[in-house]
Figure 1 (tube, helix red, strand yellow):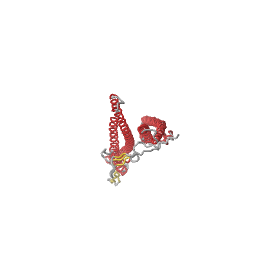
Figure 2: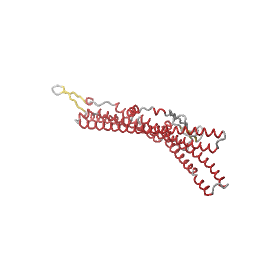
Figure 3: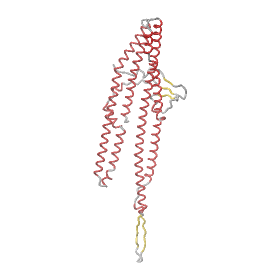
Figure 4: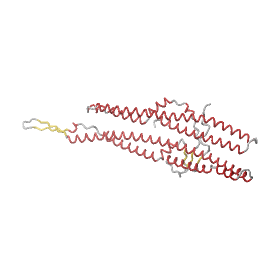
Length: 382
């Protein structure tokens, strides 16, 4: 059987909303990136740092490009005089002080230009990494929040079911079918109210965490799209070797190290002029070793995430059949109830079992989706 998860929603509730006004912020997986880029404080700080680095780079570039490298001949002054015999004497004087000052200024501008260019590249990379990190954290927090909401709804159903059972216990006790100790014991065994209260606190905490990650005050009016119906068949079609090649090509740390090696290779002539070929060779070997280490680490981490993803996928496939069987059982029980062959309590019990199985399945689905998001993020180089 081909696994298709698109026909089962992520949570067992039709809609979740804090308010419905024109000022309501609508949150969904599709617009989380847009929301965090516009509101998350860490991203704003990284963005501002990136812009500062860019402006400093532009200023240094303009100063460097607008000047030309000093030429000693431009600082020579030639005078011609005639001696007593009438012979012309030409004298050339170099303003060494001005020339050296101009050279120092030019070298400083060049150095500042190169330094700010490297700083801007790092700031841009840091910003990109911060965005991806926060987007992933927000997506994870969003899915966790929806899962907690689903569990809360399930626990509410359990509380309602237990309240009906308590009414039955009360009638049994009042009519002498059970003892007072047995009646008290049954009531004490029912901890669903406490569990619901604890879960409600968990829901509120996960909502606060989500809002903080998004950069939105928890007091804001928000609606949350619960219609997450991703089809994960594409996971079974993943070509790991192709994805590994893309990951190594996209990985920002590897890119930065390759840039570091290129910059060092550009300085080879300078080391030759200083008769420092050995120092250059050692430095180049160290940089290449660092590159190899980064590639090995990236590949190990990516392989680990691939294994995690596939384990999640295989786990949800095995639980899918169980959920399908529970859905069939519930349909049969409803039919029996409609024809008078089953009680309302029997239907409610089967439905509660089904809802529990769905909750377990959705938890696995949530884990799978988060694992998939992280895999794609790593493939893109972050």
